Image 1: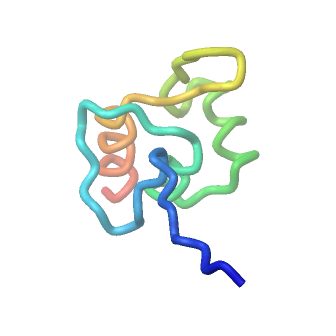
Image 2: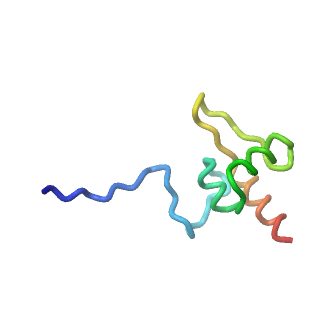
Image 3: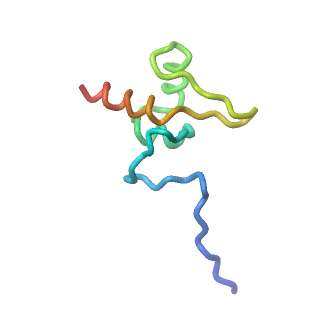
Length: 77
């Protein structure tokens, strides 16, 4: 049996690593920083409570890391 090599997804950022404020974050990465459910996240984005999404394509949505970090800092206060 051939041993599978562990291949990292290039879009996966391990938890606990620093986030570059100039990066774009996918929803999975955002939810690691903002501890809410996916449905709550999308509801608050639609209601304007959370930063607006950036559409890169029909199935690719992201947010500016600087906006998410600012939201995270604001929610800690």
